[in-house]
Length: 403
Image 1 (cartoon, rainbow, N blue to C red):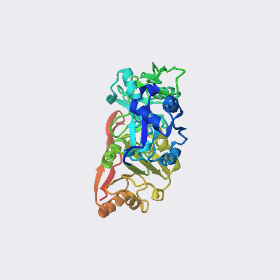
Image 2 (image 1 turned 180 degrees about the vertical axis):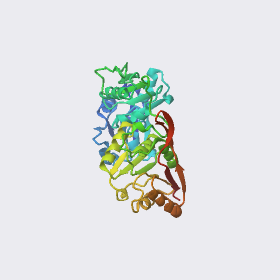
Image 3 (image 1 turned 90 degrees about the horizontal axis):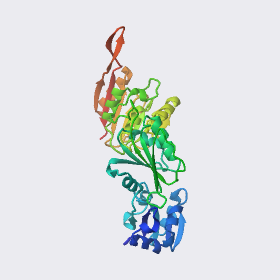
Image 4 (image 1 turned 45 degrees about the vertical axis):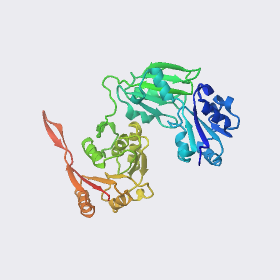
């Protein structure tokens, strides 16, 4: 297109008064203005063309929107359309050259302006259509969070979660209708949260503080074993740390965790970065359910759990960037299926604690290359009234990259 036909305009609670003259003119000249009911009400004095509210789901509006290509059209959004806004949806279907985007100050920017916080030092989250458990990996003493609420119930639910994870002393500020005439903000502790009459449009700012003796999840690989519910099928902390290092995660990658047991490897993979993805495959339904519970408890609820035996359960799964085989190593055709599914340049890591498993790894080493490592861990234990190191089962680890 020679010129943008779609204007994507951010509008704040101050309505048309906060729009630049050029942005206001685009609203007025548009043959169709699409937005939420609140946006349409805020921009009502400028709208001359047809007005349309977003359907549910929002994607249902795309065919009609795309059919208007080449004709002046306007989409209204809250604040900055490209920050947890509709801009992402539109950019997936419309060339950026066809759009003129006019952002308004985001709720995050307005909150920092009110609180005196530096935006670059804050972790920004959205709970609009997203679960609260995503905040758990971000719970670090002394850090600050800005969280877009789904509705008026989000602040209380977030405060309850903070308290349950040992962050009850955190200062929780609820900022409502930022930038408009009804703006209000109030601060309480997470443990003593008692705010009522909260407006549906709100943002929660959290200055994180931990209760005595409590701390957030470590940023290092190899979380404490006690954090995982398990029946003994758990890759222990020290071996888990080495395994994560061997898998070498990069942001945005997908892992297959085959024979996941408690799900610890997949969960720690997901905790490395918010863009990570993982599929945990487990033959035993009880263990599969346990892995899902562990993921929710540790803020990795986006884990996909597939209950079924491998290699059959691998059929139809999206190709992974990395594969970990922690169980079922001796199943016929498992390694071959995992290798076939792995993307070029991907990594495969397999751990064994049995002679039979070691034999499989030795054969695969001869076939595909890579390297073998023996991991031995001994932990201090009581021997009567004295102490000694009790060795854990030695782990043989095979690591290989696919050409």
